[in-house]
Length: 50
Image (tube, rainbow, N blue to C red; front, side):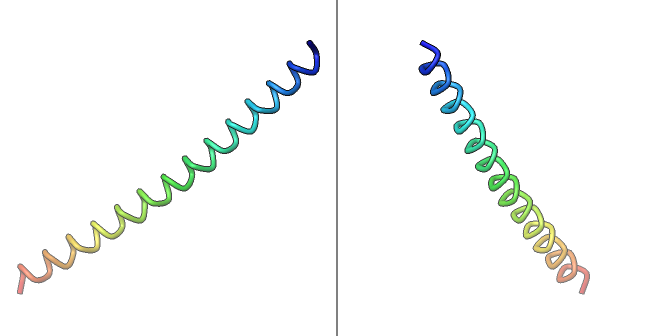
């Protein structure tokens, strides 16, 4: 019984760590998309002002 609990705890820890890594990657992608959208909006405003 104790071995099953240790294996279960280890699997839960691995799941939590992999989820965290995916979240960090997702936030990085979202941030890059926001930066690109902001740059595009700036270019559009610049072209409209000319």
